[in-house]
Length: 204
Ligand SMILES: *[C@@H]1O[C@H](CO)[C@@H](O)[C@H](O)[C@H]1NC(C)=O
Ligand SMILES: *[C@@H]1O[C@H](CO)[C@@H](O)[C@H](O)[C@H]1NC(C)=O
Image 1 (cartoon, rainbow, N blue to C red):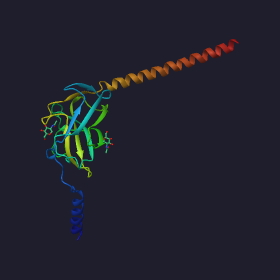
Image 2: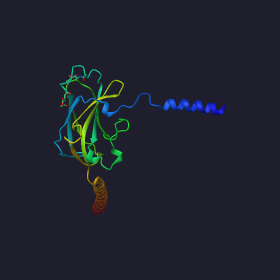
Image 3: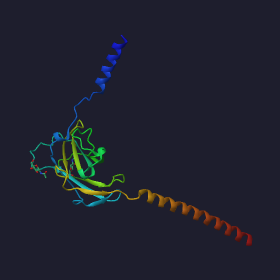
Image 4: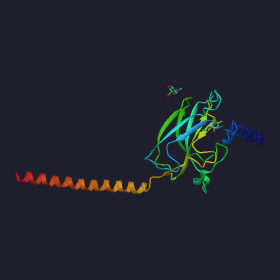
């Protein structure tokens, strides 16, 4: 009896855990968006400082209505193969739920059939590396249905380099040293002023 209950409970649990829809693979998505980013090939942009401008639109040579189910465009910063080498945690997997190519979200925008742009200040936490930008198109059920990217299919062209903030800790340290120096100096300053004040009031 107890065993039967256990089995029934396990089955129930398993059916709850089982994915309700099958995984979407990258290779199943048609490339319908034309995406471009402002940095030139292998240009170096600085994380936390520089701005990149992204532009995307439906490939004009596709039949009218191709985009009828398009709802949102999710822009992501993706590692070029050069920056994935020997790094399993950035690996490309065809199953989009497991893919680690595009880990940095840039923006999510409502799809617009006319050309769209987005200006992005590179986030401070983007590591040094070589990147491209990919735009995933999602439908109203929030499933990926198409994509576009700045790089070619081999992810070899239109790549740019991000330079992470070098010595972030150093600059923080400098800031805190300046701050403490300032507090010490102002403390002494006040002390000195108070002394002078009390001296001058004594003299009166
Ligand atoms: C637009 O689509 C056509 C037909 O599928 C394709 O040949 C062409 O390379 C695409 N253009 C861009 C810029 O992706
Ligand atoms: C699409 O973009 C055009 C031009 O920028 C704008 O006028 C229009 O309201 C936008 N449509 C949607 C659905 O956001």
